[in-house]
Length: 344
Length: 109
Ligand code: SF4
Ligand code: SF4
Ligand code: SF4
Image (cartoon, rainbow over all chains, first blue to last red; front, side, top):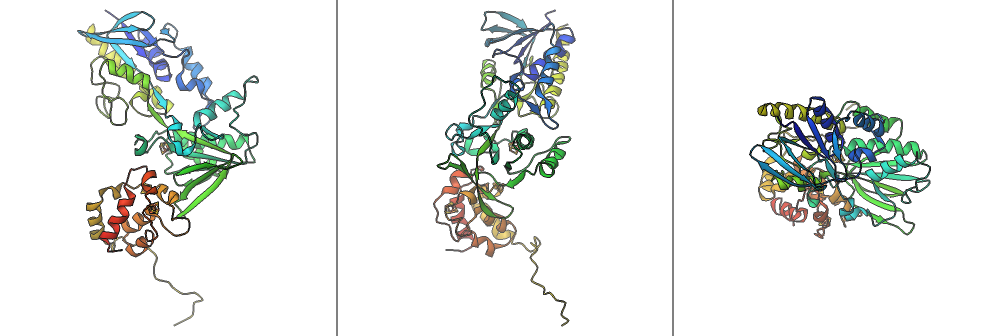
């Protein structure tokens, strides 16, 4: 029996699913487009709700993939269905025949420059959530060049929620799920870094749904004095001192507000990975209106696609937290295992 | 009457039992998108008239939902129909058109 399983994407979902499948006795081939494993996790510093170092989670994932054959810097060139198995050709010239293909291609961060009115890439002191994580992560590295967009002593810092999410104008109506918790976490962290600074979060709804997330919110208010302003930022302008003038409505008092900031952090949301979609189009996988892949149903069969032998794990089927993604990876391994019994 | 040292003002409570749903229903028929508002305040924040007058589409929608027509109309009285709010609305509501429709349904010029 052919025990090959191909896993596409070497982020947390792909790593965890590969480890589980390998453990069950399958012959796992993991394909990663970039030159390192770990996906977005490899670039993150700390994780909500309680600030666990991203690196410790990544190390645990990597420690378990012994025996998994993986290819870095490798793309999927074609996928063809032959009777019941898939023939996958990789960009390194290798061809693999597998009964099951697991898509774990994850997400792309919303390109914040598309929301021009927020000035990312135009104004000097506008960064994204990912840029801020890189900044936090780089402080341990003495050689790293500090991000010039982050002032040495910022006095006022703002976080803009829902950038590229919940926005029909930009074509993403969905909520990206993790950015509220990320914003509150980063607001606390930046306050720790710059204790003299006033920190504002501009939100529409605070989606602190997970265990201990509400405590994180409370801590942000009580221990860090973060100011939460309920209103979407409508526009940002740069003044002659390169400071950022932010306009919103404080909807709770029903008055327009204006505040001048030294640093603005945009909570860029999630969209389906472009590279993942490319693979999806080779086997005509359906995507839903939000751009993410469609599962077989929305409750019971989240790991199955509409095609036999093609499975999903992680954020390729919609925004997910890291624990959600790891659960899905394990569920996907089991789903693949049950499917493979058809071939015995 | 005994002097208690304070006076009563008419209740400021929003009474949804008495709210006029019928006229609002007519507005919804004409502008179904009015129901999509998520009260984000982008329209109010970007409004060219909003800094000096109380112009606020968000508030107008909210007050209409609550059956407070008179107050609602106060929030669109200052509108100059410039359309800036329509550009920013993340729920893609044609707010400028909505102002015109509110005026039509609620007989305001
Ligand atoms: S999680 Fe919060 S910040 Fe992110 S899109 Fe949803 S509401 Fe907006
Ligand atoms: S159309 Fe009216 S409400 Fe909208 S921004 Fe212009 S003046 Fe303000
Ligand atoms: S911008 Fe649109 S969604 Fe936001 S408050 Fe105004 S009308 Fe409602």
